Image (cartoon, rainbow, N blue to C red):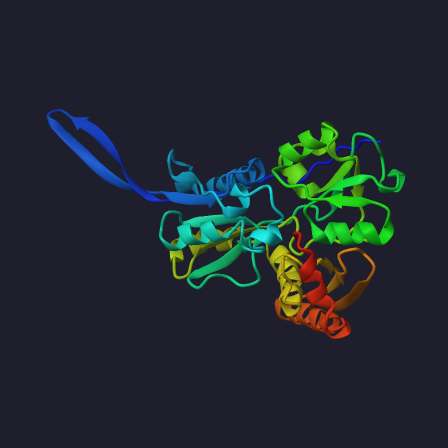
Length: 353
């Protein structure tokens, strides 16, 4: 059965500085008034999804600040990242986390862009010195979508079916439930992956429903997987916007767009990841959400083949400080539970998060 889903659709703008001139004739007298026009350069990757998120940011800035509605006030700047250039290797084999953010960080620090729009699940748990992340936009649906042209559910896949995924998180959770499946490396933008699926390269794939929502491509989603079936990646569905430390103008713009509920939940998940020293070669999942006055968190770390999954959960007060503490405690708990060689064994397998 096919289903259509609607999701949050927004945009965010960047600005640099320029000058516009208003000229009036008063008989022989020409009066010229110079008016500063802010120009914000918004840095983004060039994939269709990344561009959709950058345009979302641009549109939010326009709607929130009248001065940014002028033509040319916001400029989209495409920055090619290592993760976009190398598509024939698992991400872990070419450097892991940071492959989709590193070049954006450099462009931000050297002034080629003023803000950088990131999918938060691509952002390492540390930020480069000289940059801050004052804004996260309202989070999209965090779940994963099962996509197939042959089958309507994971349970229908015959033994030996090929699952196209570059995610060790998805692979480990899939194999824990269906050990007879075979996972193969499957990279590229959303459009290319769906095309390869339709060409029969694999029997199914899994993608974040957030990306499909943002690109109006939910018609491809065969089934949305509940979080108890497939726990999402840390920060999945969240967009973060970075700027330079001390850039008060950009900080003012970005702080006004920040969605604090998203920021608290995502930072809880990121503190969990940091406590585990999670890398691109380690299957880790985490999901925090608001539940009344409380925060609820679930996390796991797994063996690549799904043979062992360690899980944890936390309930704490809904506050930034309590969220960070809960994530750290959960990560420390799983790190202590895991055998000393657990993470080392995972590293030998390669792959991506």
